[in-house]
Length: 324
Image 1 (cartoon, one colour):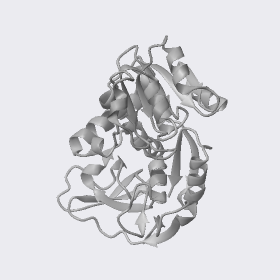
Image 2 (image 1 turned 30 degrees about the vertical axis):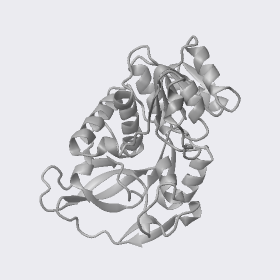
Image 3 (image 1 turned 60 degrees about the vertical axis):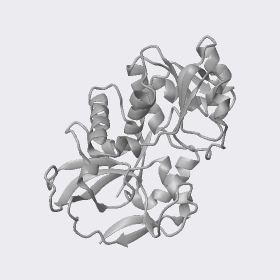
Image 4 (image 1 turned 90 degrees about the vertical axis):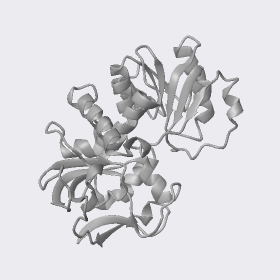
């Protein structure tokens, strides 16, 4: 038996229950991981509340973790007992131990400890696909980064700056503006008192940004579109304020022949090759010092409800980890 956080219904943080679960031996092609640290992400909230539907209950949520391989199923040749591994984007991470398909986990470099890995896999690989695939940033490009003081936001600011972009960080308070600037934002917009599109245009000489990476969703969608330069790209990749209302594609033309996409990390980790490419790029960015992972909150896994409360209340900055 092991301890895990399960939900028996969707709802508020109170539905998160710390319970005994049976793990069992890994099946063919699987490994069992004894987890040492789990990540906390907004997608966990979406699953808990039912914004992203679950198939059945009870369900263990959580989407990333790091740990040590403690058993290997038949046919697994690339992982062995004792290997340090981590994974992003595989539901069921809020647990002390679990079985997962071996290919879903990647080996950790010696230079990256388990807690850092659990704090960076999902967020860092999200930043990777946004900056390198969704809109490949070029030196000199102005880009708009939402939640710039958060986990993904701080990585986007640092990595974007390293790629030569002029990063404009969108935040909800002056204190978070300072965090975004420390992470590499050349400019910040405090959306609680400033007009996002107006400031974005001001910072770009009236032209607008090349790309807006928007994790807020409903509340900022139109402001993001209005912040873009002609042929600009809006990547709406999160729903922190709720899902975006339906729109007509016709609005993209008059606003400058804009591009709109709704990417997900699931597509960018859909097979071993694309997973490895993103993970290796992230490891290089971190070990080279281009990107620093800031773990600003730590909670015992049993206290995950409080972690969710703080995340939803915008009390957290940087990355948060849960200790099983």
